Image (tube, rainbow, N blue to C red; front, side, top):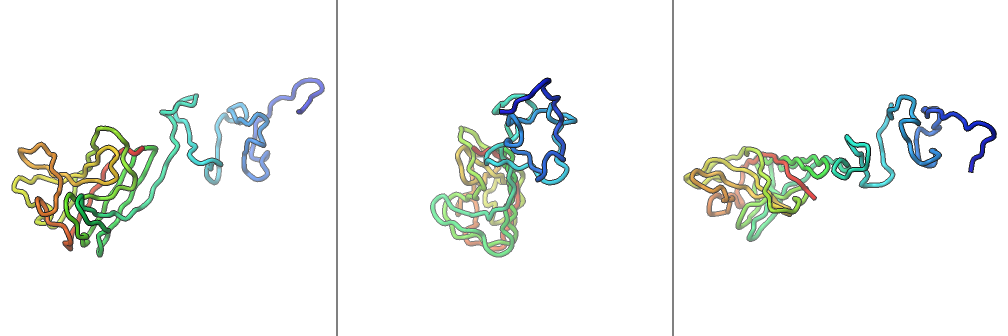
Length: 217
């Protein structure tokens, strides 16, 4: 314990010169806390490098002055993945040849995912067409709807007379996305089903490009 004779010393703001290794840790702060009173400008400035936490799954509370769970940003990730095609009845695998690419950005529990399949050959599958997701969707009785889809050749993807367009659909707790069909005079519940409304199993020269946003746990 530190002791003083006379008046308690005036607090002096921290500067970079106080840190020989350029790192602030709780061991270097008397009370383990850095407040605006410890900083000359009231702002924490990092002139070079990144803000790195010693413990995983920690984050930053934004827009509040107290630890409010709904304001905690504790996850950010971006990366790539290899989309996998599967059928609800049987068969799965990554499309071969051409380009089979997936990209994602995850901010908190919000996931933006993009699919880019160009001039590929699909694996043999049966049943509903499904595409893998980078993260499992959150639970709950809801659906997430994707953006417009670019697809080719038309004859493989649309074999119904009242076809309008395709879209991605993800339900609660789903680890895959289904490809829904917009049809005239329809309740929009139909999805692509091999041999019923599409011909995609083991077919080559296929193109499929789209994106969507959904929530994960």
